Length: 311
Image (tube, rainbow, N blue to C red; front, side, top):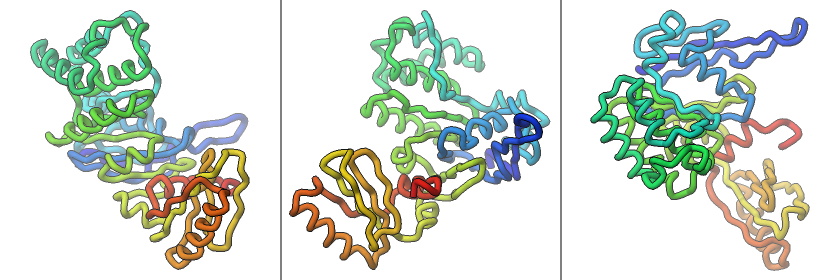
């Protein structure tokens, strides 16, 4: 086992006697060679949890073990074993990607030849070699993001933590990046993927946990988490305009609006009734189109983290 987290709670003191519970009795483990997805809104407690895993923040209670030793007792060891790509944008300044990545490789103990070979491979695979010697101030957000990723994996630790690695990255290079992330696990390296991009996470992770208000709303394999909302279906209706009204229906368990589309959740027994309604709306020109499909991880995420007034 690479990481074992047992009953981690982190409480911050607020104003007066108030307290903020950032993490509330979190328990999970990560195997060697596993990609573990950590999903949650801003403020859900993801960053607090990551900081405790790498030993820069002490939990109020609970224990974290990284490759057999306590993170609380050996925080420097934890930081040595972990490689992290933070969510915040990398301030490269006048450093070039080649300078930034090679410097990080040397800091992590790599020799010059190994670092150069791996850096060239990463730049080629991610198709950013043309900017290898361009000053950071002249780079796009996507290239800076990919440079930060390369810095995290140039000489990866036993646990790699990637916080929103695909932010600002174009769709083509995202595919290249996911391939490299999966290859990281071939030698037993474990990965924690912290992300808001639930659709990408569904395809990339081995297991996932949804963090909401400091607690796990669900955790397990993607099929296991999906079963949290039973075997429901989703009916996505694309409206003519994002300003169009949508109504509630007796066949719908819930409805979530996203711009000009509405996603309805429904039981198998209500499918015929829902399709009949959608067909009528389409023929009358009230909607652009509709699609029926099984529930996605994103649907489950929205339902489990929705506030009462949003449902």
